[in-house]
Length: 354
Image (cartoon, rainbow, N blue to C red; front, side, top):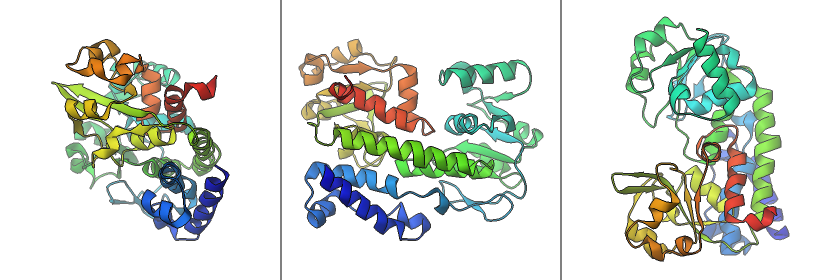
């Protein structure tokens, strides 16, 4: 473990000498790390995941209100001409981040998801419900967002989510700045946290969150679990109409599982959040099953799937239904992502927290 720590420090110093955006997107594959530094396969895999996080520098994220343009997750260049006082936020992670930074007073509208199916953080949910009830905050229909309603609210910027720009956002992007968030990796999450901080003049809060909390907790959990046995983990992100969804290679949830000390079967699928066959899950013989789609999928329903009664995780009672708070910490790309990592580590390696 000491050797890995030294190697990580060297790599971070090297990456830190590289220019801006390139530094934390410079990836050395686990295979190359094994060859170059004589790491074990596990050490190389963990180093590959942790290195871009430790190399990330908030100072390298481009964009300043009224000056340098922002670059969103779709690669769009977005210019905000003046101070931001009014925000329409239709991305739950960004909404939570604004509350975390103490910039929630700038919100004029959010998705109505906060009223119907988002449950955490409890204090944020309650505050949003109160403000909507008092008429201080507008709740926009998450499934049918009206471009006209957004424009009528006269926002200085609109935050949206999508791996392609949503139709309603395309309709307004020539009238108001629109920043689209579509994070897939852990580095993308850090980038987005900084962008939000820059937009609302909370750069110091963003830097503190990343440097003093997320990096520290990520490194601590990774070093804690690296010498432990690595159980085979199947993480279910969805189950609809008989189709099973999992993490997939390159997804930030899969990276969290690696850092938490698990061997994620989802990385064998080369896209994020893919469908995986029941036969593939059975053949991998997972020792731990984590249901991120609870309560739609339950431990009882998993046991009842054809052939799943033979899976080691089912036989040994290692099928985990997570509560809403834990699921949101793990899957919502926001300020509690380090808590999500710890939640996974407590499931995969409970003995380390006794």
